[in-house]
Length: 118
Image 1 (cartoon, rainbow, N blue to C red):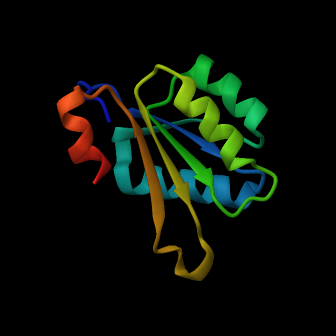
Image 2: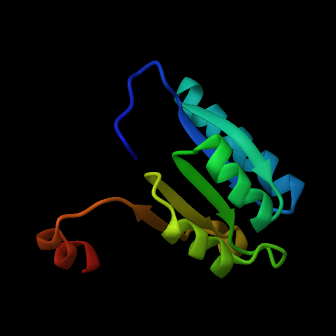
């Protein structure tokens, strides 16, 4: 994530149509990270997420990977097209929830792309 002054918390947007998932992730982030994290919104659809990306400008977006109501491919297409620096985490709570997929949108020099793609 971009370097931020200590006074500014990281802004997090959560995308899930399951209220328990959204509130659970919000609670987890806020209890573990204390003042360093501010959940700016919990939205339930890709359409609401696209609007929230522009209005709320989060540093991190957590997407419920198992949510069939959230079209991950459609959301990631919007993520790739944008310019605001942020990370997206696709989080699955199935099978112990030990895996997460992280996408990081940032500018790289051409010489860095080989290292990043490995």
